[in-house]
Image (cartoon, rainbow, N blue to C red):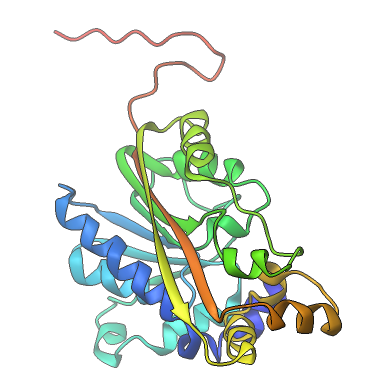
Length: 260
C-alpha cells in the first residue's frame, strides 16, 4: 500500500474526516494521563494532524513524524509555519516502517498512532517494535479499525472487504509484545453517503480504497450498491498501554532487583 498512500498525499486532507475526528478523541483522552514526555512520535503521521496536536500539548518535547510514504512527510513539512522552521521547532521527519523503526531502544516517551496499525496483516511485530522504542514508563496510545467496520456493505454482499482483528485480540498482542495492563475500548462512528461514488472517492483520496474494499468487478459492486442503505459505520478500537520494567532478561532468565 506504500504507493497508494504516496499518491494520496495531495488529496488526503479533503477526505480525512474520520481520521481527524478519531484523532481529536484520542487527544481528549490524554487529558487524563499524567505524562511529561521528552520525545514524542506520531507513527504513521500522514499529513501531520497528530504531531501538530502533540506539539501543542507538549511544546518542550522533541517531535518525530514517522511515515513510510515520503510524500506524506513532505506534506507535514509544508504545513510547518516558517517561524517554527527558523527556530528549529519543526518535527523531525522519519521515513520508516513501524515494524523497523530507525530509533534507539528506549528513545520515545510517547508513541501515538491514529488509524494505521490495522493495515498490517499482523500488528504484533509493530507492537513489539514500538515496545522496544519506548522508554520504561513510556506510553503507547493508538486507534485502529475493528471487525464491524463497513458492516452495511458486508451485509449487502461485499465479500472482499478487509478483515480486522477485534479489540480482545489486539489486547492479547499488546501483552505478548511486553506491554503492561493494556486498556482497550471501542465505539462506532457512522456516516451517511448520498451516492456510492462518494464512498469510493473518499477511500481513493485516502489511499486505502483497494486495501479496505478489496478487489471486486464493477458488476459485483453494482449488485452490492443496489442493496446498500448508504450508511457506513466504522468500528474504532482505542488502546493505550505502558512500558513497564522488564521482568525477564533477553535469555529468558527472571530479573531480580534489589533496592537499599
